[in-house]
Image (cartoon, rainbow, N blue to C red; front, top):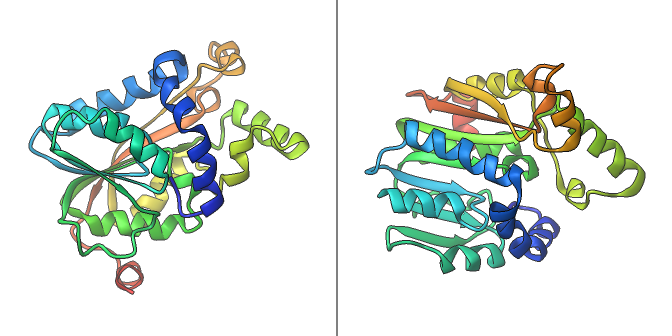
Length: 242
């Protein structure tokens, strides 16, 4: 799911469990509802979509079933194998490939780029977002989710990892973001902000605090929809083409 070999190996080991959570976990079911609502609001059946860090293909397969032409890319061969098992049609193609992509030449300009809980694992987050810009058609959409830095539960998790090295996935996290910092980053990279929000507050701490605190403190993930501007700033364009 990312460019770090150890992190890809980690996600290989949890691939089956990760996939089952979409059936058994309220948090994963909430994730699917939130993303499905965005898909139904922003994505047309004729759109071409590239799903970067596609994992077990839950979103890619949904969009292919909707009629989209989809490419799902992930560094984990195990995740891609799970994706292939449930592909609904020939309109979705899965590729084992670490990210960022070595070259964009094989890929036609896309209407939509997806990055679901993937960007936080990238060593070079800015470079990955620049590549997403380059993959999109003019006015194309980027839909991205990341760990919410202001989540109180995330703060507890970070502390627990510092003390005990659990939860294990924190060993691979490189980035978190606030709504403001993510929007600012995307604006700097020549995207317009369509909408941003918070989700994933099913853990006991967040559920307890929801009546008393704002959503930015009681949800573990933030999600944003961004529209590509016509021109990337000169410095970013030069880095993307190098």
